[in-house]
Length: 369
Image 1 (spheres, one colour):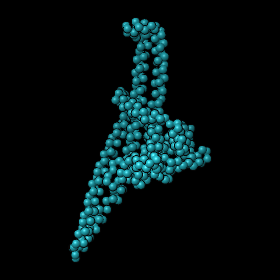
Image 2 (spheres, one colour):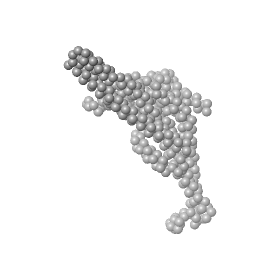
Image 3 (tube, helix red, strand yellow):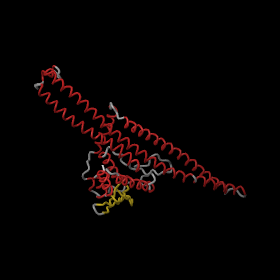
């Protein structure tokens, strides 16, 4: 155990520093249509191999998505740190809808940097070859990447759905965690949606008072004497009142970003539980098949040629009871090996999930970074 922890520590110490220092607008095509413009992020890292070596690469958001999907496929039992939103979710009037807006780009830059640091700080994720290539090489980092990721993900979704519907003996602890993850996602989504509606109404109300201030300011020019002065003061008050909500709403937006991060983490937690359901379902199928084959083998051994076969099978099958028994023994041996392998994989999920993930991953969620 000490050796394992030591190797993990040395692996995480190889990546000394990761920062995203700059952003830049680029065009994907030869023309300059708006849909071909994207934002590139300059990723600077220092890796000890064995001496400290600096690397600078440019990455766009879709590159981070490819890396994130690869980590999900390679480490299905680990809560993968979430990526920031591709476009603004749960937006209200003041928030920009343009993904090239400078404020949105800066928020995404900080979140992408936090994603890379979390991956680099994880004892297993930081050793992934593609992650290291992502940090080092500008263009060749995707050369060894499996291009069937989309089909693999669709197949994984179907398998997890089938497993959740047909699982006969679900794990109680994982069911509780999966239920908690679903409830947490629903609650956070409702909070963010209601908060966006309230922010819209608050912002609209204060904008209405800004219109009142404009009207009163115009009116004061038509009035002379004390009435004009009172109208001017009332217009100035309305203008100040219209602006007083913006600092509060911007402060709430920082809290909303933290809630979105927890929402994405809850989704990653649910994905780990779904992977466990798939393992449990496949293990149940193998065990049921093993029991059936074992019963057939016992019938052949105990009952001779007439056991374990229907009348049609006995007429059409040229094999002897000894041959069928030998074939079943080979099948049983293969199934037993598969069951042992899947049982070890399930234990790995349990060990990684409950001891490594819950102790380390949840402790690395830093909403103040």
